[in-house]
Amino acid sequence: MGYADVYRSWRDDPEAFWMDAAEAIDWERKPTKALFDGNAPLYEWFCDGVTNTCWNAVDRHVATRGDQAAIIYDSPVTGTKETISYRDLRTKVARLAGALKDRGIGKGDRVIVYMPMVPEALFAMLAVTRIGAIHSVVFGGFASSELAVRIDDARPKAILSASCGIESGRVVEYKPLLDGAIDAATHKPDFTLILQRAQAPASMVAGRDLDWNDAQESAAEADCVFVEGNHPAYILYTSGTTGQPKGVVRPSGGHLVALNWTMKNIYNVDPGDVFWAASDVGWVVGHSYICYAPLIHGNTTVVFEGKPVGTPDAGTFWRVISEHNVRCFFTAPTAFRAIKREDPEGEMLGGYDLSCLNALYLAGERADPDTIEWARDLLNVPVIDHWWQTETGYTIAGNPMGIERLPVKLGSPTVPMPGYRIEILDDDGRPVPTGELGSVAIGLPLPPGTLPTLWNAEDRFRKSYLQRFPGYYDTGDAGMRDEDGYVWIMARTDDVINVAGHRLSTGGMEEVLASHPDVAECAVVGVADALKGQLPMGFVCLTKGVSRPHDEIGSECVKLVRERIGPVAAFKLVAIVERLPKTRSGKILRATMSRIADGAEFRQPATIDDPAILDEIRGAVAELGYPRK
Image (tube, rainbow, N blue to C red):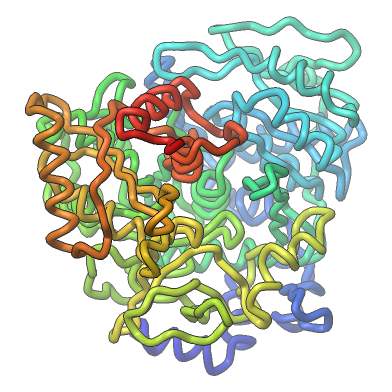
């Protein structure tokens, strides 16, 4: 069957579609039905099935692929490489789970994981789900104040951490941050397990902090605790508009079914293939496609402790792909923009043999056509943009390479996946005509594995996602559909700006700027204007080695936007900057940049990679005459 047939089979009988997909998962008790809609518009899946996440990700593979690599750890920052088989992974996870069980952790208890990109981070996630507990991974190195907020919301019995993480050229000590968070939090964990790393051993608090290895010495291996299909596997906090993070809940049964389905149908990998998602376990990509989906499907997953550039150079991705025989590679567009800026001619690809690679997948933020074309021409493989969110946990719209390779339209993540009925709505909730910009909404129910609610915040869940468009999930994104049914995600809803009554997408302007040969990376934000309501302001980073006058390049950028979008964009403000402020996952902090330009108060984002960049942005907007007095 082709894509249209598969999508139609879901649309015509979603119950049968998802029950069939559930056959690929091991259940202690199979579900009698897929959808439970008795509490609509809050929906759940596979509630009466009984299963275990760790069993499906680890134990069930030992008999058939016990000697196969489950995890390849590659750390250019420490010079370490390690391969862990499924058989060894089961032993390590079961013993860690036993250490947690011996200290009172059981079904429903929360455990925070605050770890760097090391295999032990995956051991921790799997060990928690093994005994029916619920993990909440917090990005390693998060500030104490932000970690404290998550401790108070999740109320964990234990925190699993490490003494330090290692960034490009620096060691980040985690233990002082963890100590500060526990001191600041109202809730106190019963204990912590600390993985001591040689780069910065941590001092321990007697009676609370336990050494990772010592705590497991006398522990017996714990068996899997099987749980109901709607039992949470994890909570993952995502940023909220109020500054208070939202705890996305991931239910066990739907999570297993959906992620397993994606591995062949979307990513076109078979069990045994090497799959690499260059992200971090602290983000949703790390949960879904470093830890869970590859292991559930019987693949080998790569845990990479490094960066696209600087560890040691812009060729590190090519080395990892070639050395570990990676078939499918998944990363963020910003990673490729960084590589392109550092090595615009792709010279560092050099003698690496990338014939093993079948496709590159991009997600995390909008993939501009220029970056896609550069990557496609360099690697000579399909470059697939796909769109999803922390809340969904996997692809909303993409190109289902394992079903049918659809024609690529640069700038579009292609078409909706089974389970997702996408509509483009105006502010009154009415569908807009083809080709017009509107709010992207998804008809309820959302498919299995997506969030059923927020942790201890049902009212906030309803208000954030269900209230604006009754009968739909509000994605918070703006976009459109074309005559072929392709979806175009143009910007976050609050990145659609209103210039003299015209609704314009900043993403569309970024696309134009990115096409300039000297532009490596860019962002466009809306700034307040007394006459037109808003004006677009562009921030541009130049490709390495460009020495032309900045005024000249800025003028060319303005001309490009006027030519391709038109005078209606009123685009005339361009700042050349060295760097853009980003989160640690690579997302550009456009809302923060806009508030700086408007002179508005703002809370420094907890996820910002380098706060010093904000001073450069302030200087750049000041040169453009902003904020206006």
